[in-house]
Image 1 (tube, rainbow, N blue to C red):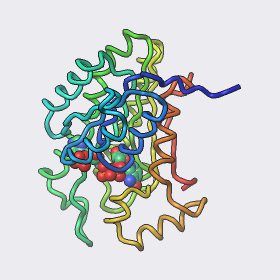
Image 2: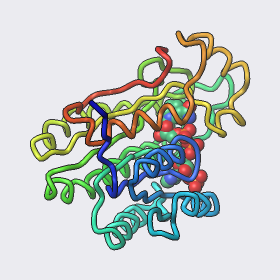
Image 3: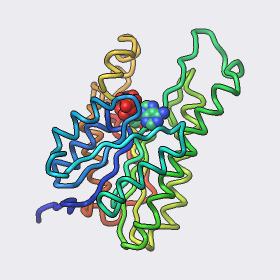
Length: 255
Ligand SMILES: NC(=O)c1ccc[n+]([C@@H]2O[C@H](COP(=O)([O-])OP(=O)(O)OC[C@H]3O[C@@H](n4cnc5c(N)ncnc54)[C@H](OP(=O)(O)O)[C@@H]3O)[C@@H](O)[C@H]2O)c1
């Protein structure tokens, strides 16, 4: 028996694909013959370079602006993909608006509402809205796949990550219930929860001692690569995934 992912010519929308896990996810779907729409916020040049790499000239890839802080841009991005390719078969909700890192010694209760409320609103509400926008088409076609990117921090926690983790954990409850609602229509929805992953951002910004600490707590003795997360997403969002839905799949080396 061979495993056919059945992704040829499927339209895949990957949000936040101008960097990190999203960029590698776009590559993984393109390698399976999918048409890939990728979104960027500030990284237009990086997104356009990726479109070229994935066959933009042959209409295999396209880049659209998408800003979680701007609901109008969410609508416009979806409309542009549907106008160009007529459908969204797969949604990978990966984009993340990062918050300010809390200064050492700072407490949860000192984070101003003006800081954490917009962060939750953008990351959670606009991600859920993006899912709402793709669902009618998926239901009508009787086939769809959704992956929501979460984090091991929903389980492990870490000081300074309270509001980030709250927003991510909410995705788990959403996916569990959406699985019931959309499953009979052929739409499967799963959460992919990476451990600390060797993206350019993590390698450049995270203090080495934190990376070493995480590595030491990981049964496989190493951090995940963006490619390993991307391949998991591609499988869950493929035709080879026939009946996995409402699950949280961890890609964390057993952390
Ligand atoms: N890397 C890890 O260790 C790790 C661990 C656990 C979970 N995750 C999750 O995996 C996902 C990807 O993380 P990553 O580390 O690969 O991220 P990343 O390298 O920081 O890339 C973030 C992506 O999101 C886009 N983005 C940033 N702000 C945005 C906004 N306000 N609206 C829309 N898009 C925005 C960026 O676009 P521009 O660059 O164009 O601005 C970029 O394409 C996230 O959901 C994250 O929570 C990551």
